[in-house]
Structures are given as C-alpha cells and as structure tokens.
Image: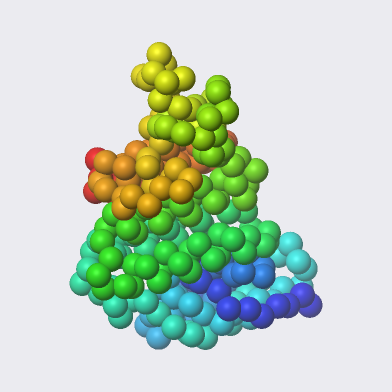
Length: 244
C-alpha cells in the first residue's frame, strides 16, 4: 500500500456516484494529486471540499499510479471572508481552475503552491482591489509557464539586449522587445504590462491587467491547453471578461 500525508489546497471536487467525490488538490511536497473521497458529495464533506480550502489529506492506493483514496480534514477556509463578494470568489475560482487545468499530477511544484497561497491570502485582505488579485494571477501564470519549461524572458530586449523601455513580448519567442525595436512590428507583438517589467513599482490598472491576462493566456494556450485539446478554463474566462 502506497500512502502519504500532507496539507494541501483544494482545487476542485467533482461528484462521483450518488455520494462520493473525486478530489483534486495541490500540496507543496506532492504537487497536484487526485483521489476518491467517500461521502464527498454529502452535506458535511461538501463544505470541507470547497475550492480554496486548506485541508490535511492522507492519500492511499495499492499502486502509485492508481487514483487512490483521500481522507480529508479541514485546516482553514478563506470562504468566510469571501461569501457575498462575487469578484473575490471569481478570482479564487480562476486561480484554482488554471492550476487544475495546467499542472501535471504527481510532480512537486512548490513555487506554484507558494504563489497560490499568496494569491489566496491577497484575496482575503479587505482593502485589496480586483486589479491586485488579477495581477497576482498573471504572476502565478508566468511562474506556471516557467515551471513547465516555457518561461518568458522579460528582462532584456530580444533584439538589442537593452533592459530599458521594454513594452512588447514576441509571440514567437516569449522574449521582451523594446519600444524602438518593436515599433515596426507593433501589430504583431503582445503588450508587456508595466507590472511585469523588472524593477517597476507601478500599481496594476485595468488596462495593464487585461494585457497581462492576454499575454499569459496566449502562451498557456499555445504550450499547454491546445496541446491537450482544451481551451481556457471557463472560470478564468469569466474572470478575464471583467477586464475586457
């Protein structure tokens, strides 16, 4: 019998049969993992298995490659701070859906786990705004691309090597392009939002957030989602539409 125990963040729980569920979680040590939860669709367990909850899980299976079973205990939930706030819930749903649709199972991704924890903490802070959460989601997605081997190079211009006046990203290479080098190809390049430029302390606004979400969507779709025959997760699409 193969088994492990860890704390994790719930990504999703899908009903299975009359009363069970298939739980999808992300842990720092074990990465993304899925398993059956007995009674997971029942009233008591359903509240525990909400996306964004931090849970203590024990996973067990006869073989490592099997789906396995989870036993789950609630550690903490951000939902008490978010109930009635549709914008915050939309940001949470987008983040967990992106990870569930992007991260392969059973590969430790501690950086992604840390970024998700930071995003969930930011969403729960009362004075933060929608642009703050969206920018954090963009940063998380940039980290996801790097973790999967498709990192963007946003520090220097691909054409000149300069680190100044970077305003574009090449859709072919994922490398930054300066304003002068990119001007003749303006219509073929992706905008680089200021909050992704190294050393820039400008607060994100709606325009820069929209540019950031389009940028990461382009590369996630190109390298991950379309490769597996799926598109942008619906929860992310709904959240991104807030900035269209």
